[in-house]
Amino acid sequence: METLNHKEVINLLLQIAAMLIMARVFAEIARKFKQPAVVGEILAGIILGPTILGNFFPGAQDYLFATNPMSNIALDGFVQISVVLLLFIAGLEVELQVVWNQGKNALKIAVASMTLPIIAGFVVAYAFPEFLGVNINDRVVASTFFGLAISITALAVVARILMDLDLFKTNTGLLIIAAAMIVDILGWIVFSVILSLSESGQEGLGVWPTIALTLVFTFFMLTIGKGLINKTLPWVNKKLAWPGGLLSLSLAVCFLAASFTEFIGIHAIFGAFIIGVAFGDSEYLTEKAKEILHQFINNIFAPIFFVSIGLKVNFIEAFDPGIVGVVVIVGFLTKYFGAYLGGRLAGIKRQESVVVGFGMSTRGSMDIILGLIALENGLITDSLFIGLVILALLSSISSGPLMGWARQHKF
Image 1 (cartoon, rainbow, N blue to C red):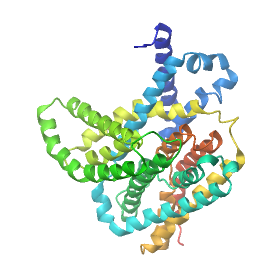
Image 2: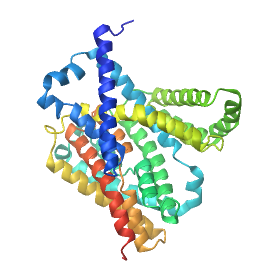
Image 3: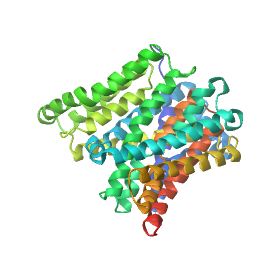
Image 4: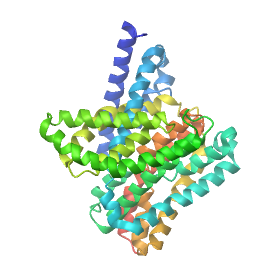
């Protein structure tokens, strides 16, 4: 069994230390400007990566991230675990009861806010694959992916913005949250199926068995599986050390679910997300327990993932203003108008529909994760990935002010 040598262990530890320190520094700077931590963490990665450090201090960048392939493989393992855990806590935020309570209105907004971007994104990517940078050999799948990528709403980011605006517990706020939850669930199911159809996707059991098992797994975990978790958690809380027992067992189940979906040909993150929904919906998973899980993952694993984004591509060399412009304009306008129309179809007043449109346009971690997986599977180029990252950053920064502005004006 091959192991890391002395120099590679030192290199790996320096990589993680540098990523965590830079992520914390820039997350705090972002917080000072009332921006999500993810904005600062991505900027930290761009500084540590080939874009800044590689340009001005190439020797230091090579020493940290290029000279030891084995330590880079180990770091990639950390990043993969970080993605799985990020999707697990994203699932924890999905409260099925909130979705049921908002009912048809939330469903109309969610479906409309996804349908318009998916159709527009598919048409643009399919018509201009070489310009936009989608895989022309996997044209239909790659074009569908692009449409899906610009249709995702960042649940965690929009929840934070709604709290800052004192909208979280209002009817409009709950409607946005419920619609964003539905988008998350639908988006990851569709993306997992798209990836299984791709020629560059993971090996699995075949397309139709994979789709069938995905639907069975989802239904089982949100019904019987959720019931089993409800029966098990009281015993865990009572008999095992708290919070250690809950942490270790919940993460073990998360990794088991992730490994199962990876085995059947669906990305591991889908299993983590669905098991997170099942856990988060349990009445026996207390808010304190959720907070512990969030703090543990958001302050250790999440920064490693978001910093790693900046290490993947050179944001100067691969930056294409035409691609970025198309992604930002098509992504923002179609998402906004889709959600706005969904609100009007649901019978919501015009002003509230405008707020819903801006709220549902919020992007963040989820679409970046989705874009990175597509990049690694050869569905998109570096330039298109950069466009998706910039769309996520701009929408995260602008959604809060736009929602605040919409609340204060009559339409």
